[in-house]
Structure formats: structure tokens, C-alpha cells
Image 1 (cartoon, rainbow, N blue to C red):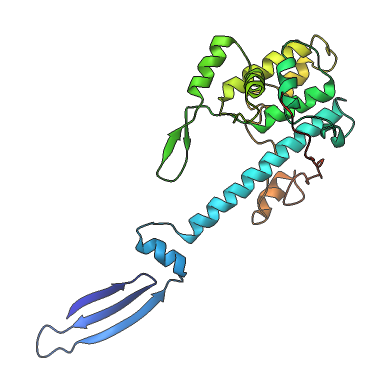
Image 2 (cartoon, rainbow, N blue to C red):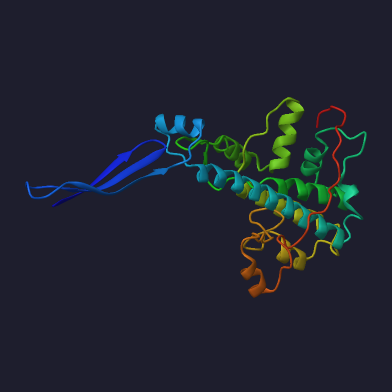
Length: 275
């Protein structure tokens, strides 16, 4: 008897049959077992498959889940930084970070440019560091634009201009906005934000030696391998509900998220003006 395994591979199903095929007159062919496996595929998934895009439903969910985690970590980093400002006495509460009613939209860029040369208030300094915290910067001159496409960021010429003029990111942006209020802010490298933070820190510590201490910079500044003020890495570990054993073994987390989110100040639109 010849043993034959037949497969029928379709888009949404796989049919199979195990057959014993007769090789002489004394034997009889028979179907030993057969079946079908239905693969649930929606119309859109079937269309993508027929177009040659090998994208599984789990891949789509994984991408969206990664986006949600990145957003949560971004918000947690900023919440942690605001808590540090309150703890160190830079601001009284989160409402101090909200812009004033008569403040023009580019006020922070102006303060970032001034902070390199002159004294600014602790409230403005906290807002400056929070603005720097919002941007990660790029460590190379490429960023992923799509699954099969990458493009160079427009930071090469900007970096050359920063090196030539010796300006910081804030000074560069402020100068461009003064010339053109509709100027689109380009991408910068992580090193550019680190340089701006260090220069602002060194100037402002002359006016606030008790607040801008070496200990604070060592714990949260660019002296750390993973600095918080520049938002290079996450500071909170978010535990998945499906992993309760790890939480019990570590003993340092009592809920699915180690630190609950706090409401942040609402940012209202301000009058239009230039830097």
C-alpha cells in the first residue's frame, strides 16, 4: 500500500487527507482520515494576502500595542519630571507649568535662547527642561518612514549650522521664528539637546546654586547613562496583567501599573505672536 498525504492549501482554509493507495489488484484504496482547518480571515486581511502583503493580525495588534506603551512611557516620564520639579521646590504644583493668558506661542523658545546667557526664573527653567524632555532627538541621520522605506532626516545641514554659529537648539529655533513666524522646526540629534541642556545648566547654576546641585544633575541630568531630563529612556516599568507571578516575585508592584497617572495641567491656546 502506498501512503499518500494530500494537502489543499487555500487562503482561509487548509484541507488534508491521509490515503492508502492500492498498488495491486489484491489491495483496496481507502481514505484513512481527512479534515479541514479553517483560518478566520477578514475581507481586508484576505485582500492584503492576495496583494502579497504578509501581515498577520497579531502583527497589527502588536504594532498598536507598542504605540500605546510608548505613549504611556512618554507620559510617565513627563509626570516623573514634574514630580521632581515640585519636590525640589522649583514649582508649587502642576498648574505653574501652564502658560499665562497673555503669553505668546513661542515664549518657551525665547526663554530657551535667553537661558544660555542670562538668568531665568525657576518656573521658566522647569518649563524649558520639560520642553527638552519632550524631544528625544535622533542618534543617526536616518529614521524609519515605513516598512520598506527609510529617509534621511533634515538634521545634517542644521547641525553644521549649529557647529558654525555655536548656537543651541533653542537659539537656532528662536532666530528662525523671528525671521519667519511660520517656520517649521526641523529634526535634531540627541547630542544637540544634550549640549543645550548642559549649557543651560552651567549658566543657571550660577544663579541657583542651591537648586541646581551636582547631586540633582547626577541623579536626573545628562551625567546618567539613561538621563531622565532628556527623556532618552523610560523610568517606569509597566507590568502586564498576564504576568502576576513576576510582580509577586519582585514584591515592588501592587497593581498592573507601578505608579498611577495624575491629571496634568490643561494647556490653553495663546495669542499669536513671534519670538
